[in-house]
Image (cartoon, rainbow, N blue to C red; front, side):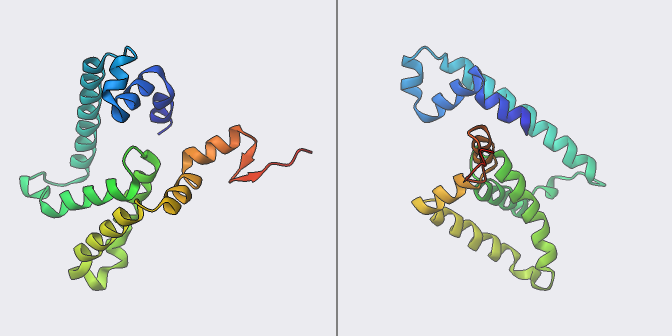
Amino acid sequence: MLVIMNFKRSKHGRAIMAIRDNRIAAEATGVNVVYYKLMVFMLAAFFAGAAGVLYGYSLPVVQADTFGYNMSIEILVIVVLGGMGNIGGSILAAIVLRALPEALRDFSDYRMLAYSVLLIAIMLLNENKRFKAWKSRFSLSGWFRGLRRGKAGGKEADAS
């Protein structure tokens, strides 16, 4: 996670984020868009392959039906719940969604219904400006930014 956070602050990370925000403006400032898109594709393939190897290692037998419709929905909910481009949020969402089936053991028939309600609620909340401000205030990167500015958790640090 620290490697990704440092990568985002590097020259390459800033170029990738510039392409994500506005490809034409990034290209106008001299960013090689084709190079960085290819680099992101290769990095995504590497991390997807590494995740597949680690997930396959945890299974007794890897079959095609292991990665069915429910697994696709779970991965989608993890990404949406954690936030696109938010590594810490995705990790927290993965932990919550791995613990959720245990909490809903008596209601296992309604697990996918709970996922869909959670997905819709987060998508609606992401449009809310107050929720965005609250999410950025309590995010891991916001906490690190506050430490660098002399604030911890949004409160002023003591000057003594």
